[in-house]
Image 1: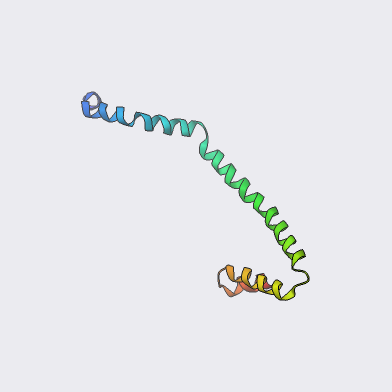
Image 2: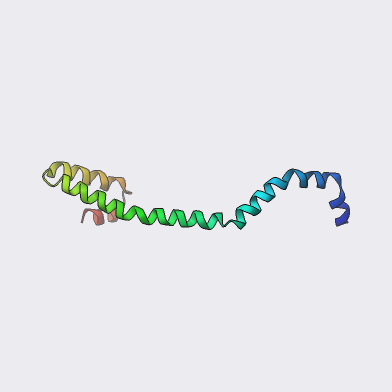
Length: 93
């Protein structure tokens, strides 16, 4: 029965039409594309921390003599986070 299905023209036509996609998926899997994309995402996420620290440090140096502007920027950053009272209290400290 399985041989009859495999030898049918509909099955063979479907195999021919899906062959490029199957080859692409096999190559995609064999090239470890998902592993490399996960590594790239992880490394980009890890590099954001030092960049953020540097930017906040520079911002602190620039706004050192402007306490009103410093408070305004701080309040805007605090309000970017969810309005959970515990989160905002922790950030304010």
